[in-house]
Length: 171
Length: 208
Image (cartoon, rainbow over all chains, first blue to last red; front, side):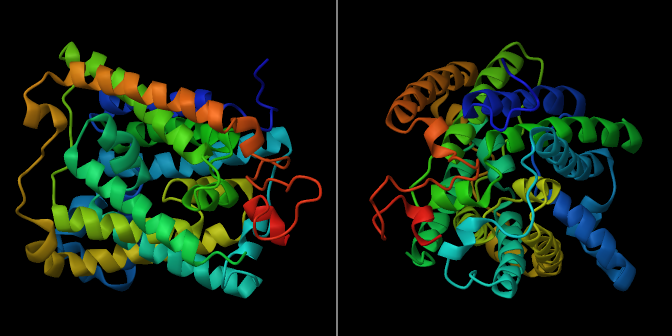
């Protein structure tokens, strides 16, 4: 039987749950599931304390206010809460860094991994905003809408990811 | 809808999303890096299952005229360059913009740095956007979809594509059963078979 205390559920069940989230997204918010534009909403909100002038950039202005933008921020916060609860219920809470990083060039030490993680986050969001979507917005939602731009972006994403993972592999 | 209501809905949807990401183990850096090394296919399974479900959901909702679709515009340069950078970042982060939050929730320390880097990346893009817009982010042929270019109704294509993906997933699961792929500790690290050591062993575990 399926239980919240299970360590793992089938990818086909969890993938279906994620796909079904399109129903409330489209019906209640009139938008598709996505996560990466929330980084603009939060990042630009924080940046506006240092540089109030950022509000005059159209792109920032479009992301700073409104139900859809803050809905997406809440989704990302909710992801952290859901994963927190799930990991505590099943006894799979994590700490430190994952064992895989010992097998990745430059990520073997804690400091090395932290520097890499920071740079990775920067590149990831810069790329996601240039492409106007990430694994959720272009991947899960864009492909489900048969958007041609999303097929291109997801193809490029896997190409970039595979090349990087193979080049940084230690063993 | 008020921002307050939207935030409550978002938190509830996010909690379900986060639960699914954690239970599926796809938030694990070992699973995501393993996917990019073409050694572990759990990420692809979840991704394609979510796409398949979305195709069926939208075939129904759009087919009966209940919702409007919102496909993103085709911008070849931006899709290629942005998509490739996104992929480089995902392989180095061992996370996507959404799974970073799941990693923080589950407790991985480095994910907090990925989040900070991501917020700065988004701010950097905001400042660059006015400059990039005329070169990369405008023009293009518009919001093209498979349905708009072929003239076939969306619901037919969506259901047809869903069937193809299901067939692919069945084959993928026969080739690589998910229970084996998530590894004993649920982090995508698969112990090499007894007696087998070295770089040709089961990838991630060999150096640990």
